[in-house]
Image 1 (spheres, rainbow, N blue to C red):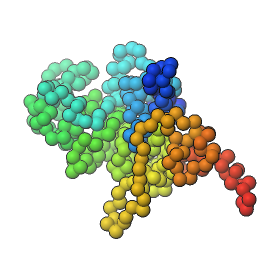
Image 2 (cartoon, rainbow, N blue to C red; image 1 turned 180 degrees about the vertical axis):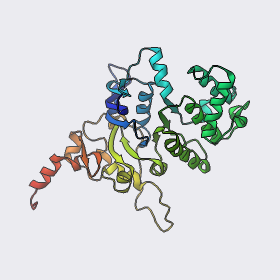
Image 3 (spheres, rainbow, N blue to C red; image 1 turned 135 degrees about the vertical axis):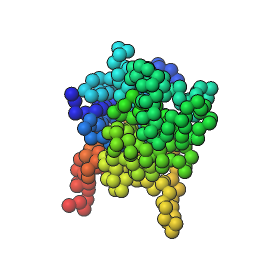
Image 4 (cartoon, one colour; image 1 turned 90 degrees about the vertical axis):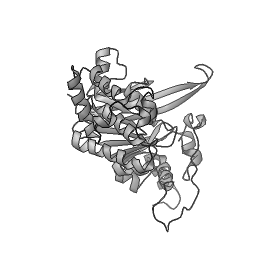
Length: 337
């Protein structure tokens, strides 16, 4: 059995805007690679602004989108193009999603507990109603709820926090090894966000569940993550230990993202306005660095050549500032030693 729980190898996803032949190719995910150890549960965050490709990456791991190229393996088995229903069911059992809006996850005309019992039945985890009830009760207990609190209730009869916890409980019924949580707190009241975030930490510690956390919220990412990948227009531009990346960022884009996070210091003031662009096809299709037009450290090479990922100071960074070519150029400049 592979020591790797999940391996994403050089995955690319291309969408065609305006038609396959006459339209524009949009590379939503560009050559992304990473792995997760099967013996050490963690919370791995993919963070970035809207349109960075993090949700597309999550959908490919879940099998909701197919990679254009590259490979996704789970416990050593290629799951990029699963054909057999039995294999797909087994994979879905072990890799469960938690989506952004709990009110869209549950049909407003259907009682919430019916989803929980249905999940227990669909994966052949229990045969009798009593066995199903036990599984449902255990899952709800792990997220701080009871069956009595949700039984017979419709989604609008629960708070946003309760409904999102129920969504997590539904995912836990199958006893997965990996949860993929796509913006799980963005639709929950601010007062309840930390309870959901803390829940993921508890699941990692108490149930050995690894969480792939997709977010644009750097504050919650820093609070719960072990590692973080910063995404920009399909590229992972910086990837490593959470403290390394968040406390001493190398990539100019990561630095600007962190400057845009409001600081709790009442004496502190922002020195500049941070404006992150909306999703633009031209940035996705750029030949060089996707951050070229907004980067304060941009060089000529950044416009023409896509940077390679290099290992610097305990993390991966995709930037010409840290490439060997740039170092050689620096050394040949007048006055260099």
